[in-house]
Image 1: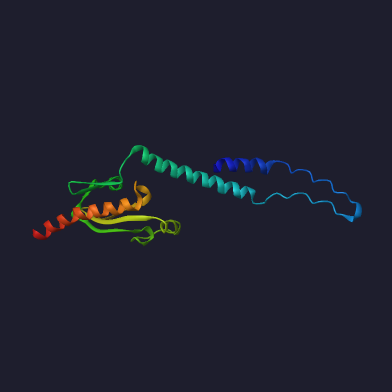
Image 2: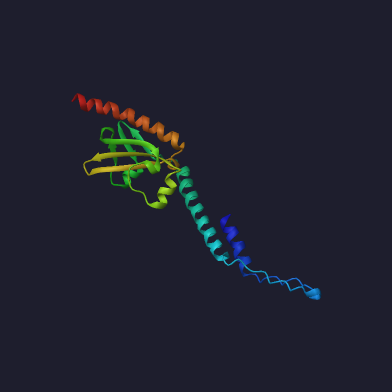
Length: 175
């Protein structure tokens, strides 16, 4: 839609202006001034093209996630698996290696955010957990628009992960 509007604006910006309507000079009336083009019309087109590209990016990102039906994270046999962990060079994390677990508004979660990300983070919720491995400490963030079910699904997953963590913590205390 944004590309269509930008194309129409482009055609309109390059069209010659219509001739001014004839105004009689009888009675001392001044001739009508020529219509003026919007000097910001090229800027509007750039904004619309940028908005179209942003929409295509998010449509491809979320459409790809929906088409592949991949899960953002899963727990199997007390281990947490995620594509984000795999991308970081870690296959999985054991439940007792998770040191911190938070579900909150994304701008309140620990860590530094850039200004643009921080502004958008006020409207998003996220699941943050810190973990430790042989390679050192790490952090994993899941945002509500990355999972089906949004914020409620993140809260349920957090409770489920906490249930897996407690027995692991109890076993460590007993040993």
